[in-house]
Image 1 (spheres, rainbow, N blue to C red):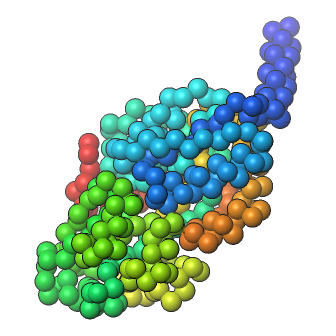
Image 2: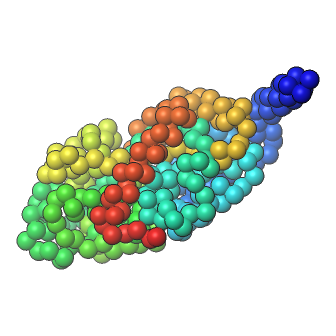
Length: 323
């Protein structure tokens, strides 16, 4: 009798969960947490997703910026929010791979076990830039100059330990050069100093403002960090092509939430994410430099696990562990 009762209760719970998913988000606002300042690629992507999902659902989707701690503030807030599917986070290479690699022992949550990965949005490279007034026109020229003048070239990024910064730490190791990192409080201010010429070189996610700045000729792109060229900058070589064989850093964006969110709601998030990413949003994202790459939640989770392993080694090599 007990087994029959358990089956009945399980069936009722499943039915209730399915009904809740069909009604999701049920008129209640959905928050997308962003662990970085407004204006960068993560923020831009979150706002595009918020608009598209809000239109699909006929509901309010709010982007909430909580910058700081290399994206950890927003990620932690998401992990501790009620597991009802109404709090998402724009998870990315920084929040869910590099931050766990740097601060594994400090985190109050499990970046894999406490999260579900219902929507993979796509991949995006970083772009390495100099001011147009600099006589350096190629990445190989930059490497040659840096080797002859160790410690004399500076590069700006959105902050210590973020994906752009660590992509250049990996570049330094592989190219055998010594250039000095200048961290900023966000991607927008780092780019502004590169545009004004106050910073010799700079690195940032291609998505958003950096892509616009390159296309407008306000900065000169020396290379993109991905294994293949960006369709948006077909004339800009990859690092591997430009003098660093085997180099490949591709960032990624997705929408994640708590693993305890009911499965029917997670399934609806995945389906609705696929729906908007197959519509007009796809071109909008690609125009920003993001290559839309959908995946199953299981595939996305496995990719995140492999990224944590990769960046743990880079963090150790760069002596940047915060534990």
